[in-house]
Image (cartoon, rainbow, N blue to C red; front, side, top):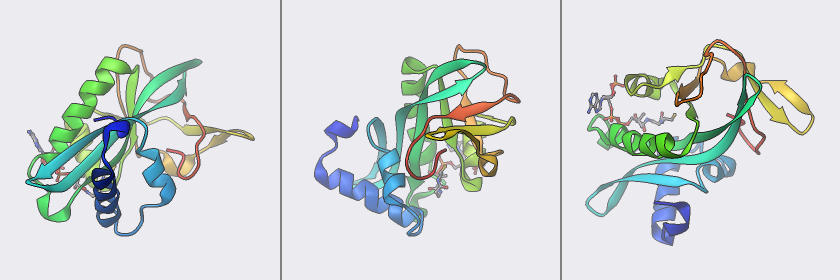
Length: 171
Ligand SMILES: CC(C)(COP(=O)(O)OP(=O)(O)OC[C@H]1O[C@@H](n2cnc3c(N)ncnc32)[C@H](O)[C@@H]1OP(=O)(O)O)[C@@H](O)C(=O)NCCC(=O)NCCS
């Protein structure tokens, strides 16, 4: 459902779940990045055990601005992993991406990279950049962790990829 349709309890449960999943490493900016788009939620009974969302960003590639469905806040409670929740949430977000965006994008943890690759996401092998208030900046530390879900726009995975500006982690 869209962020606008999350009730207060679900919004709080999603944030608490991600704080637990990322072991206290979820910043206000991280949470903010996962808002304003479509959320996929996994439930076991009344309990929220999985969250993932897709929000709109602009990525620049080959002289074009690409409307991108950027995946954020992917997490499944530790005791519920390996049961297909991550797979199911990604399937739903990819449906949204294919129907609404030029491509999908995300920054993967090592733990999640195999899941994304198994679902057809492609590792971006070229250099990454960010468009910042002071110009285009190289984001070398993110190289090798950015995945895209290609759509109809041709992509050169070994080429340059630049993300738009935001507070907190840029990718
Ligand atoms: C990454 C994470 C979200 C995966 O959630 P999950 O619910 O355990 O994932 P699933 O059970 O759907 O998938 C687990 C495995 O089964 C595979 N799988 C699941 N359903 C499948 C299906 N229907 N067909 C084929 N393979 C399937 C997945 O590809 C994955 O394979 P892997 O073990 O090689 O990685 C979870 O481990 C997590 O929360 N990790 C910590 C936070 C994190 O790293 N988040 C990612 C941020 S980018």
